[in-house]
Image (cartoon, rainbow, N blue to C red; front, side):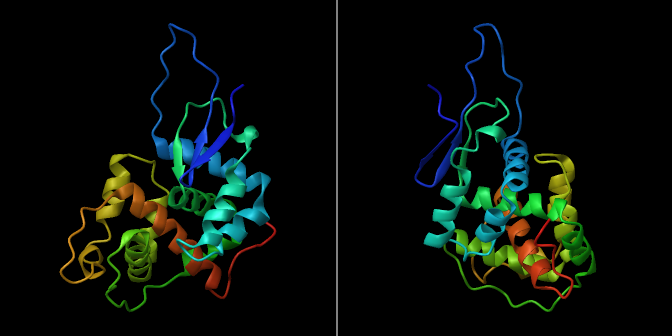
Length: 208
C-alpha cells in the first residue's frame, strides 16, 4: 500500500503510483510540485494554514503544525513522484499560496512601502535566512512581490532575486559570507511578506 504522506526529520513525502516500465516521468521543478500541493492544502485547510503561518519560525509549534497539516493530504498529491518537504519549504509554499489567493492580502502587499532597515546579526540556520529575508522585504516589498510571482527555477526568478540590488548586501550580517540559495530565500521572503502584509492596516481576509 502506498502512503500519501510520511514524515521523517520534519520532511514530508508525497507518494505517487508506480510508473509503467517504459514510461519516463516528465521533470517538474520541486518548487512547482510544492506550490501546487500547498495551494491545494490551503484551499482544504485555510484555518490550519493560517495557524501554521502565525507560529514562530523554527519553533516546536511550527514543526508540529506543519507535520499535522501536511500528513494524509491524499487529495493534493496529484499523482506526483516522491518529493521531500522540510518545514521551511512547507511554510514558504503555504505563504505563497495565501498571498496569491487572498484578495485583501494582495491589496495589503501592493500598498507596502519600503522601511528603514537594520542589518541583521543572526548567522545560524533558518533564523539567519529568515532575518535576511525579513530585511529584504522591509527594504523592497515591491521586489519581494515581484519575486514570488515568477515561475520557479526560471530566469525571471533569478532576475527578480537580483533586482533587490544593494539590499542583498545591506541585509547581510557584517563579515558573513552566504552563497544565495534562491529557492530557500524565496520561501522565507514569502513567509516574511505574508507576516508584514498581515500586520498592515489592511491585513488579510481570515475567511479567504
